[in-house]
Length: 70
Image: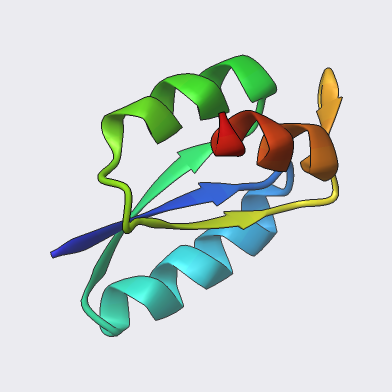
């Protein structure tokens, strides 16, 4: 099963998105803070898809995107 990291601060959005992804055969993982996101992203294979919100506690999506490129 393909893992997808869902980065979001809204529990409602996560539930809806993860339900749809599970129906499509994916294994969603959730994180809602930049520290947790970095830990989870480091565990995933390079081909994993990451869905992100625009703002995270302590960081914006652009900062997280830049961190992923390192």
